[in-house]
Length: 385
Image (cartoon, rainbow, N blue to C red; front, side, top):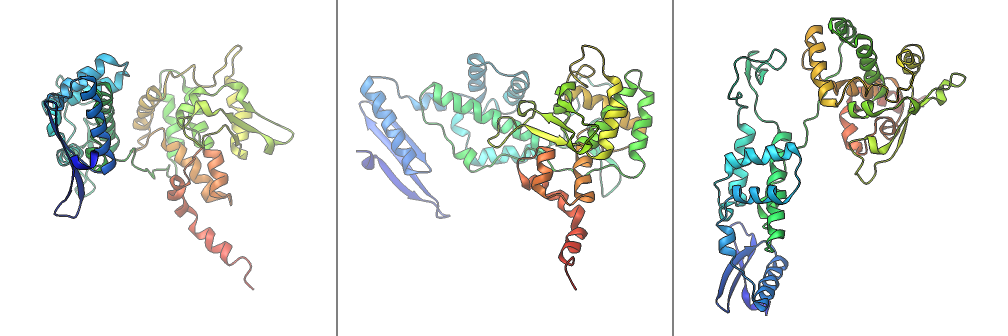
């Protein structure tokens, strides 16, 4: 039965699509699908509704605006504050677009426009924040400040906010979710790889700059050194407990830090696991001779009692960087410094380093491989006569 209702069509580029037309019991619906399987599924759904006497007025659904769909999604779901903010912003930008006009081409144009759009100033802005330069960056060609554009990671959040809301709406109202706009437009990258590591003298300047902080000066020094040595993410560090630091003074090479899987941002990934981070000599002595002096009776968290979240930590670290005159540097870059050290100073394999750093995708470590390219040549000539 389904085959008679489907028309196979070939586009000018050779792309094949399948047009469904149903005219039955007063119902008139038509829709195009990328695969025959999706077309057949749609026919079964419509037929079932007709048999039950339910409404199959797809036309009415298609006339709904994206703003109406987003509002309905927010009304029926518990949504995180950040995602709610994204949807409210999307309502202002594309809320008037009917669902029928949300196509692969229009979605591609929206994504392209957003990626090229300059970040606007806040409506009530009076002056730029000294730590953020008013959303400006240095133009590498002119050396002058220019407006920042939205990052791919930001547009990626919008991408998935739209997809989640539309998928929920289709499921909630029992109609076929149109995957084509998302299949034809892959999501922007989650993050841009950074290669910034500390240059000579910059670590000392960061440590010296902590003396200008009003509070937690020694805690800041220890936190910076911890991140510089440990390869740990800031979020992992803030969740770390004193009893997860295992020092063996008789056999220092047996010392390690235990990082529970649930403390990592990749906890839900398939290959995520608990890890034991061994201590390089400088790290061992730093913990034994300096960090342990911070420990107080009854204190469980090593650093978490001082900073409530990694975002708070990152914001305050900007102050230190400004005072130290260390530009284009973030708290997460200290992790890059730590990982880079292993590539430059050891013969550990990528897999061994990933066990320390917690990377589950070895491809993420590839950008560090250039740091030891000369060592590869040494290995090739090691047995030459």
